[in-house]
Length: 115
Length: 113
Image (cartoon, rainbow over all chains, first blue to last red; front, side, top):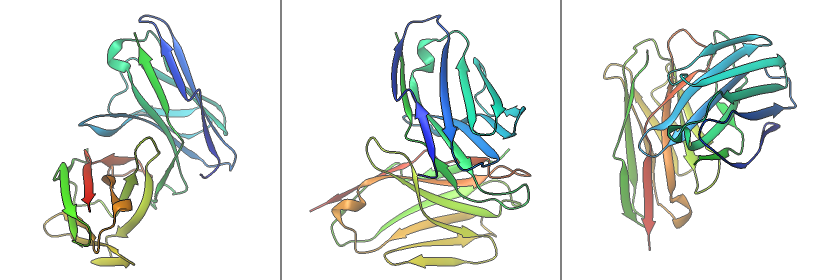
């Protein structure tokens, strides 16, 4: 599992509340990613990080923010949750470099329901 | 950015038959093409990948072929078994990035007895 754990695994929250999902890795990987998975859309990149305090937006970043203050933790925050953010969220790491693309290893996923 | 299209969205085969899933990509600079398998309720996991310097790679019953000219790559599963039933995703890296992957929309493979 490449030492990746996500928390919580399941969460139900109300519209308009902030929510933070945590991704923790134990193997000091530089590259970390947050994806969301929805039927018919596959996996879509929300935000990614190339290192501590080095983050950038993916293709579906609106309504989300991230932080990476330590190598091992990558936090995803929904600033004000909406029903459209009901999804399964996957954290991933990559052992690649800037010049060498490699596979991504995924966490177990977090199922988030916004009611 | 990269655009990856995957077909078919669903595929049903009888046990023992072969299954083929095809993906096309848009950026000719893409050089790495992984395939992931996701069982129900589980995380996606890599099953095979190919780099742009080879045309085919095999691992037991699965193989991936790459046609750089046509910008498509395919997953081939032979002698399918019920445990092959899952959703399969292809992916390609976004141009000029380190492993930021663009995924296809997935193929649900059902292997029937």
